[in-house]
Length: 146
Ligand code: FES
Image (tube, rainbow, N blue to C red; front, side, top):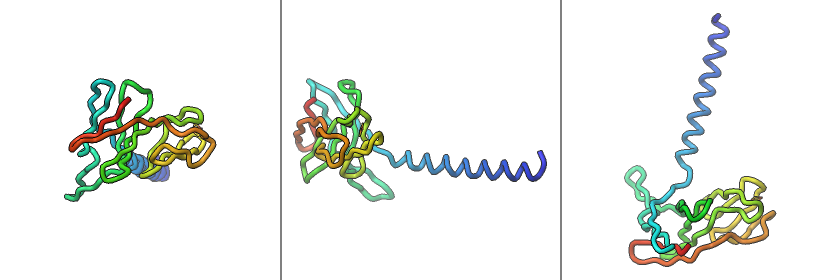
Protein backbone atom coordinates (compact mmCIF):
# COMPACT_ATOMS: atom_id res chain seq x y z
CA UNK A 1 0.00 0.00 0.00
CA UNK A 2 1.42 3.35 -1.01
CA UNK A 3 1.13 6.55 1.02
CA UNK A 4 -1.84 7.89 -1.00
CA UNK A 5 -3.84 4.65 -0.51
CA UNK A 6 -2.92 4.61 3.19
CA UNK A 7 -4.23 8.17 3.72
CA UNK A 8 -7.39 7.38 1.73
CA UNK A 9 -8.09 4.24 3.82
CA UNK A 10 -7.39 6.12 7.02
CA UNK A 11 -9.91 8.81 6.01
CA UNK A 12 -12.60 6.20 5.34
CA UNK A 13 -11.86 4.57 8.70
CA UNK A 14 -12.25 7.90 10.50
CA UNK A 15 -15.52 8.69 8.72
CA UNK A 16 -16.81 5.17 9.40
CA UNK A 17 -15.78 5.34 13.05
CA UNK A 18 -17.51 8.69 13.47
CA UNK A 19 -20.69 7.35 11.85
CA UNK A 20 -20.70 4.26 14.10
CA UNK A 21 -20.08 6.43 17.15
CA UNK A 22 -22.96 8.75 16.22
CA UNK A 23 -25.21 5.75 15.62
CA UNK A 24 -24.34 4.24 19.00
CA UNK A 25 -24.99 7.56 20.73
CA UNK A 26 -28.39 7.83 19.08
CA UNK A 27 -29.17 4.26 20.18
CA UNK A 28 -28.20 5.15 23.73
CA UNK A 29 -30.97 7.77 23.80
CA UNK A 30 -33.69 5.47 22.46
CA UNK A 31 -36.74 4.45 24.42
CA UNK A 32 -36.45 2.93 27.86
CA UNK A 33 -37.97 -0.48 28.54
CA UNK A 34 -39.31 -0.68 32.08
CA UNK A 35 -39.34 -3.72 34.33
CA UNK A 36 -42.83 -5.12 34.79
CA UNK A 37 -44.70 -7.97 36.42
CA UNK A 38 -47.62 -9.78 34.82
CA UNK A 39 -50.21 -11.22 37.19
CA UNK A 40 -53.88 -12.06 36.57
CA UNK A 41 -53.76 -10.40 33.14
CA UNK A 42 -52.53 -7.16 34.68
CA UNK A 43 -49.12 -5.62 34.12
CA UNK A 44 -47.65 -3.67 36.99
CA UNK A 45 -44.90 -1.12 36.47
CA UNK A 46 -43.26 0.86 39.27
CA UNK A 47 -43.79 4.61 39.03
CA UNK A 48 -40.10 4.97 39.81
CA UNK A 49 -39.42 3.66 36.29
CA UNK A 50 -40.38 7.16 35.09
CA UNK A 51 -37.43 8.67 36.95
CA UNK A 52 -33.83 8.56 35.86
CA UNK A 53 -30.71 10.12 37.34
CA UNK A 54 -28.38 11.93 34.96
CA UNK A 55 -25.39 13.94 36.16
CA UNK A 56 -26.76 13.91 39.73
CA UNK A 57 -30.10 15.30 38.54
CA UNK A 58 -33.38 13.41 38.63
CA UNK A 59 -35.21 13.60 35.32
CA UNK A 60 -38.77 12.47 34.64
CA UNK A 61 -39.35 10.33 31.59
CA UNK A 62 -42.45 11.25 29.57
CA UNK A 63 -43.02 7.61 28.68
CA UNK A 64 -41.65 4.12 29.17
CA UNK A 65 -42.13 0.97 27.11
CA UNK A 66 -43.00 -2.48 28.35
CA UNK A 67 -42.83 -5.82 26.59
CA UNK A 68 -45.22 -8.61 27.32
CA UNK A 69 -45.74 -12.03 25.77
CA UNK A 70 -49.43 -11.19 25.41
CA UNK A 71 -48.76 -8.92 22.39
CA UNK A 72 -46.32 -8.86 19.49
CA UNK A 73 -45.76 -5.13 19.98
CA UNK A 74 -44.53 -3.19 23.01
CA UNK A 75 -46.94 -1.13 25.08
CA UNK A 76 -46.08 2.53 25.60
CA UNK A 77 -47.08 4.10 28.92
CA UNK A 78 -47.27 7.90 28.82
CA UNK A 79 -47.44 10.02 31.94
CA UNK A 80 -50.28 12.40 31.03
CA UNK A 81 -50.96 14.04 34.41
CA UNK A 82 -49.80 14.21 38.00
CA UNK A 83 -51.02 10.67 38.64
CA UNK A 84 -52.55 9.60 35.36
CA UNK A 85 -51.15 7.48 32.59
CA UNK A 86 -52.17 6.21 29.17
CA UNK A 87 -51.13 2.79 27.87
CA UNK A 88 -51.08 2.23 24.10
CA UNK A 89 -50.18 -0.71 21.90
CA UNK A 90 -47.44 0.36 19.49
CA UNK A 91 -49.09 -1.29 16.47
CA UNK A 92 -50.00 1.18 13.75
CA UNK A 93 -53.66 0.84 12.75
CA UNK A 94 -52.82 1.52 9.10
CA UNK A 95 -50.72 -1.50 8.08
CA UNK A 96 -49.34 -2.78 11.36
CA UNK A 97 -45.86 -1.27 11.60
CA UNK A 98 -44.32 -0.63 15.01
CA UNK A 99 -44.73 2.98 16.12
CA UNK A 100 -41.94 5.15 17.51
CA UNK A 101 -42.58 7.34 20.56
CA UNK A 102 -41.32 10.93 20.56
CA UNK A 103 -41.92 12.76 23.81
CA UNK A 104 -45.69 13.16 23.75
CA UNK A 105 -46.69 11.62 20.43
CA UNK A 106 -46.07 8.56 18.28
CA UNK A 107 -45.10 8.34 14.63
CA UNK A 108 -45.10 5.51 12.16
CA UNK A 109 -41.87 4.98 10.22
CA UNK A 110 -43.70 3.18 7.39
CA UNK A 111 -46.09 5.79 5.97
CA UNK A 112 -45.95 8.69 8.40
CA UNK A 113 -49.11 8.41 10.50
CA UNK A 114 -49.01 10.18 13.84
CA UNK A 115 -50.92 9.56 17.06
CA UNK A 116 -51.29 11.56 20.26
CA UNK A 117 -50.19 10.22 23.64
CA UNK A 118 -53.81 9.14 24.10
CA UNK A 119 -53.67 7.02 20.94
CA UNK A 120 -55.80 9.36 18.82
CA UNK A 121 -54.95 9.71 15.12
CA UNK A 122 -53.36 13.10 14.41
CA UNK A 123 -52.17 12.52 10.85
CA UNK A 124 -53.21 9.96 8.19
CA UNK A 125 -53.00 7.59 6.42
CA UNK A 126 -54.11 5.73 9.60
CA UNK A 127 -57.81 6.33 10.29
CA UNK A 128 -58.36 4.32 13.47
CA UNK A 129 -57.10 5.21 16.92
CA UNK A 130 -54.65 2.91 18.69
CA UNK A 131 -55.58 0.05 20.98
CA UNK A 132 -55.53 1.40 24.51
CA UNK A 133 -55.50 -0.31 27.89
CA UNK A 134 -57.18 0.73 31.12
CA UNK A 135 -54.77 1.97 33.75
CA UNK A 136 -55.04 2.55 37.49
CA UNK A 137 -52.46 3.44 40.11
CA UNK A 138 -51.62 3.17 43.77
CA UNK A 139 -48.82 4.88 45.67
CA UNK A 140 -46.05 2.89 44.00
CA UNK A 141 -47.33 1.24 40.83
CA UNK A 142 -49.19 1.64 37.59
CA UNK A 143 -51.48 -1.26 36.70
CA UNK A 144 -52.40 -1.98 33.10
CA UNK A 145 -55.32 -4.29 32.38
CA UNK A 146 -54.49 -6.39 29.34
S1 FES B 1 -48.29 1.26 8.69
FE1 FES B 1 -48.26 3.06 9.88
S2 FES B 1 -48.76 4.63 8.51
FE2 FES B 1 -48.82 2.84 7.32
